[in-house]
Every structure is written in C-alpha cells, then in structure tokens.
Image 1 (cartoon, rainbow, N blue to C red):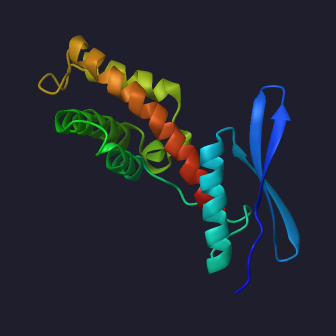
Image 2: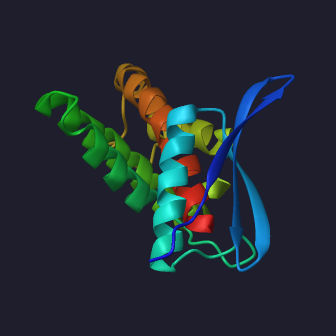
Length: 172
C-alpha cells in the first residue's frame, strides 16, 4: 500500500495566515490554498489524503460539481440538528424552506448553483416576502421577517462556510 505525503503549510501574508496544501500527483506538484482556518485546512488535508489513497482525487482542471440550495440547506440542518432545540430547528426549516422556494421560483439558475448567490438576491427575497400583494395569505409581516433574519444571518454565515468547504472538496 502506498502512502501519500500531503503537507500543510502555514503562509504569513499581510492580511493574516493562510494555509496551503503541498503534494504530488502523477509526478506533478500541486499547491492548493485551502483558507485561513486551521481546522478546516486539516479536514481538507485529511479528505485529500483519503481521495489520493482511494484513487478518486481529480485535479482542479476538471469540472466541479454544482451544489444546489436544497442540498446545502439539508446538509446545514443535519449539521446543527444536535446543537439547537427542536423548536429552533423547526423554525429554521420554515424560514429556509421559504428561502429555498423563493430561489427555485424566481432565480432557478442561482438555485441550481449556490456559487452564484449574491447579497442583492437576499434583499430581493426580503422585499418580495414582505411587500408582495399577490400572495397576501403567504406574506410575512415585518416582525416575522425581522425574527427570520436572525437565524438567516446565522445560517447564511454557516452556509457560506459550508459552501466554501464543500466546493474546495468537490473541486479537487
């Protein structure tokens, strides 16, 4: 059984510390920046070693897997399931399902690929959910939207961390 050496290097830059993987595949040296969080970098390193051993590692030039919003939300809810109360989890599911449905209907390209999400789409979601007259039965009050923004902000930060983590894994 062959062993692979995947080195995790710490690089000091003006804006802080960045971690980089350094390894070889088929005689080619590959250096890949994995982020500024050491724990995430170690997880990506372990995953890279596993892919190298199993023979499933793909160089970055190959097509990346697109992650849609529904898959990302499901993964997020699975990851926080043991850390929040059941009532909070149910509330998160309600808010995030409405968020997901909005993207499925109004921005299908963004729904299919989370890398395309921008801040303007979140503002559009807020405006459409509060001010839409065609859906008066489904319209949220400003108070509901305000209470929804706290978990959405919290979730979006964790979602973005997960997006970056999974995209780095899937691209390699």
